[in-house]
Length: 214
Figure 1 (cartoon, rainbow, N blue to C red):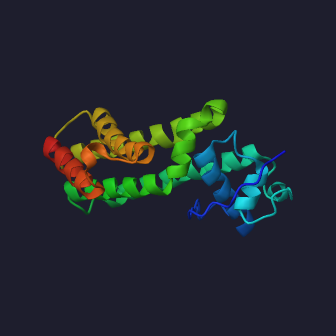
Figure 2 (cartoon, rainbow, N blue to C red; figure 1 turned 180 degrees about the horizontal axis):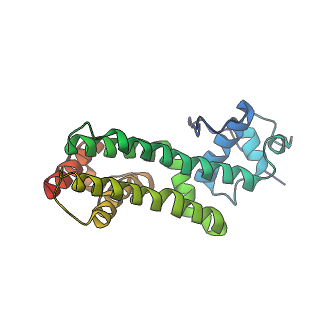
Figure 3 (cartoon, rainbow, N blue to C red; figure 1 turned 60 degrees about the vertical axis):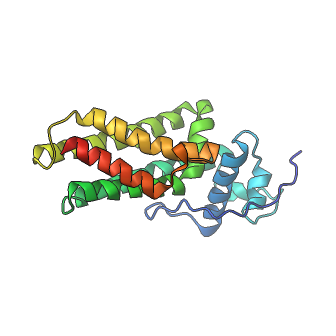
């Protein structure tokens, strides 16, 4: 029997403009992703999701919006992938900025994205081994696609002689991995490398990459 669980208070949003769900379905999705991140997918019950979404614990109301608990997870993963795809669209609009200014914009957007998607990041890190299709979707359509698009942007900067020729794939791997590690350490260990704040990290990240490629 499912035990009672108090509603989760932390605000959360998975809104993507071109994926429309009813308000109630959005509440269910947000509540589920919070609970999956906090408790783990397997330990979260349908009743707990319903209660956290402001619905009656044992009502079965989740099934009015999603065919199963796994379908809720799949929608959350789809939103996670789409949010990164939308962010990558900004790369083409950065050519009016200096290379250093563009890097700062990229880093700041990445930091905001990590914060917005922290629940989905936690779920992807811990819970998707049991769902290889969803794990592969995150790996190819979010992680690998982000590295590929940033690498292509860096190569374009070199082709237009805004920066020195370089191994854009390797630089993209180093640059984006460092951004990810900073946020993962903050989320999992509640600390940052050397205890520095995000603004200092972004500034040093930008200066290091810009100097290396100038």
